[in-house]
View: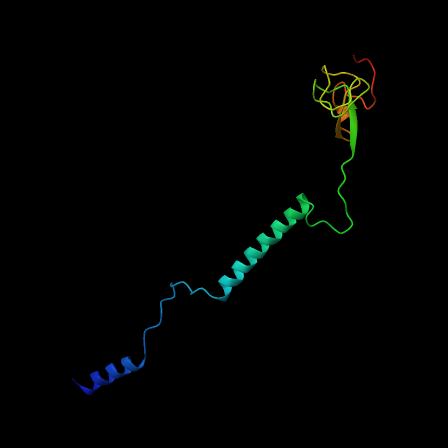
Length: 126
């Protein structure tokens, strides 16, 4: 072995391992962890916003939920009335469909949209 060949071998050995190819993906690190944290926090905020919007769990202090109701007469099916009238004392005792005295409780504004619905008792029923 010549001195020239020996010096080449020594130079190659002292240079260390060959560098990694550029096409190899980077190891997981800060960028991946930050991306995961952003995705998870966004999902958490979306879930909390949905809970606040569609339930009363996260409502503002002092706010109350109220749904205006009204009595709708003349649209009740037999046995489906909400309360008593002058002919009986309890709910569920309507004897015929669409009696003028019988009523059910509906959200405000709904009764006027139902055919035959009236806000006051009477008016041509049996």
